[in-house]
Amino acid sequence: MEWEKAKNLILIFFILLNVVLAAFMLGERRRYTVTAEHEAVIRNVLAQHDITFDTEMIRRFPPMRALLMSGYYYDEDALLGMFFPESQLPQRSEYDWGISFTHGASELAIANGYVVYTNPHGMADTPAAFIRRHFPDFVLDEYDERFVHNDEDGEWMIFRQVYRGFTVYSNYIQFHVTDAGIEEVIMIFGHIHGRDGPQRPIFAPDEALITFLHVMHRFAPEQPVTIWHMDIVYFTEFDNAGTEYGSIHHAVPFYRIFTREFEIPFLINAYLNMSIDV
Image 1 (cartoon, rainbow, N blue to C red):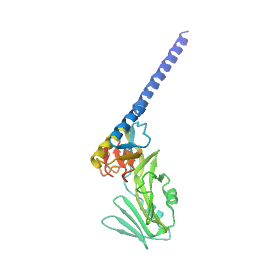
Image 2: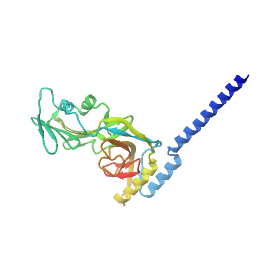
Image 3: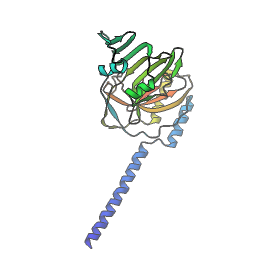
Image 4: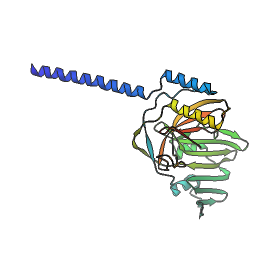
């Protein structure tokens, strides 16, 4: 009889524990969720300042961890294998600014973290085939219209790495394609070693939009603006030493905001709610 009572008490305890945990999880979810009321308020505030929010609001903003990056260090042999056939033996030259490999009219240069390949005769490859073969976790960044367009010399397109569903904005490969083929490739990327450090709260999307509003007041005070896309990306903020992770060895979450009036996206550090120039 005593054992039956004990089992009932244990059962009741676990039921109550599950209820408490469920309530806690629900509270945490609501804590990091933009409600419809908050969305209506921020849309109204933006509209009062001639900013139209013509896209979906980011609803969830749970704490996020930084990414641990290798820095911009490249395997020369791997790069040579990408751009020069085995039958070609490029000449290696070292300069104050970096390293250059040349064969005929083709040149591969590595300097200041960038890899630049030029070939006026064009590579026979297509950007999609090159990416599939060498960088399968990079995808076409269809939002960044600066690099997805045609010009009088051909077509530009840019691919960025995707890590666990998030675009790594500072890891990219840019192609210039003409009738001759791929004439130019510009790459910069750090190898991702996984997430690093504790989860840190990020500012809510509506708070980031208020920061964007202040940026617009400084940048273009009389300009009506339409936001057509907003997302969260990872970015290696190596040019801004004022941030905690301002190095080539960490990428941190940023809100990325595209407008119809400006080619450049606006980047706002989600940890600090501070904008940077890109």
